[in-house]
Amino acid sequence: MVRNVRVDEIDAVERPLLATTHDYPDGGTLPLHCHRRGQLISGITGVLIMSTPQGRWVVPPDFGLWIPPGVLHEVRMIGAVTTQSLYLDPDLTGGMPDRCQVVGLSPFIRSLIARAVDVPAVYVPDSHDGAVMALIRYEMLHLPAQPLTVPFPTSPALAERCRRFLRQPAVHETIEQWCDELGVSRRAFTRLFRRETGLSFLEWRQQACLAAALPRLVAGEAVTAVAIDLGYDNPAAFTAMFKRVLGSSPRAYLKGAE
Image (cartoon, rainbow, N blue to C red; front, side):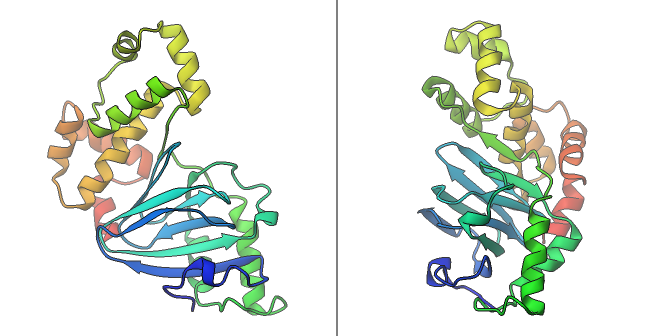
């Protein structure tokens, strides 16, 4: 098992895929850094929040985050977190997303990853261990994208407005409000926003609200308080959105995240 070992210590091993596991306390952070290999990171418990100059990504349990080679990023832990990471040689990342992306992890690939962290860094390619790692490489190509990404535009004024929203999210803020503040027409705004984030304003707003809500819920705040702070008319409306995106109610999700 490769536990609590930095990937830099084993990166020179000539294997296409490496797996590690780490334990972090609540509030633990990984300062700005990057890897030569592409990384698929997931947490067995707690929530991971990764930030780059280009956006923010929230990773609940049973989800993963793909980070392409060379991307500068920092990670913050909400709750005690045990991570599992797969590191893919940069020459073999074809077919993987070219930008950071939260992905769904099926029970099958989660079981493969749990097996992979028991594989030594210097495994024999033509062996059971090697077959497990080879199968994971193929499975990684079919991970479904999940709406837990909050990308930032490259336009400075729009990017700052997005960051300000994340500091104080409000689900009922409108395109018209943003257009008035930025001094642009609705048509110009919607085109620019989608071009620079890949999302419509409504999609982005929902994902930003969810990104703001998850850490608070994991920290023990009441669903009602979080929903009201975000501007939802009632907790039921927030719960419906949460279930639509994550597949379960906040209460059921939090029980699974313990």
